[in-house]
Amino acid sequence: MTEGYTLNRPTGLACPECGGVMSSEHIGTLLQFRCHIGHVLTAETMLAAQFTMVETKIAACLASLSERAELCRQMSETAAAQGQDAASYDAARQEALDRAKVIKELLESEWLATGRDYAKDVKGWAPPT
Ligand SMILES: [Zn+2]
Image (cartoon, rainbow, N blue to C red; front, top):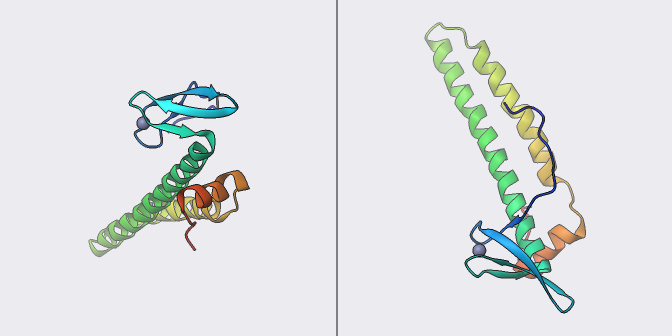
């Protein structure tokens, strides 16, 4: 477990298309980002793509926690069937479910318009219902 995460200012932004490092540039009043292999996104498009990427990664966390809970359930049943103590698996399952609940609430909470609405308008993305 990592202790004491920090939220320092990122030194760069990752390209939502390829994960490469992006540089920013101003073209008149337009702010845009360009990665080292040529993807170019306006700030608004970048915001939408980044929002979609964040939601996808958070949803992946929810899926992983749900799968962990299921694995712990199966291991608990197996241990119990063999007459072994299953308490640690039951506790780990509950821990995964508790953490999944936090992630689920995060996914279902509203974002500022600069996230969800941009994603919907620019990329045709719609939040899951
Ligand atoms: Zn790229």
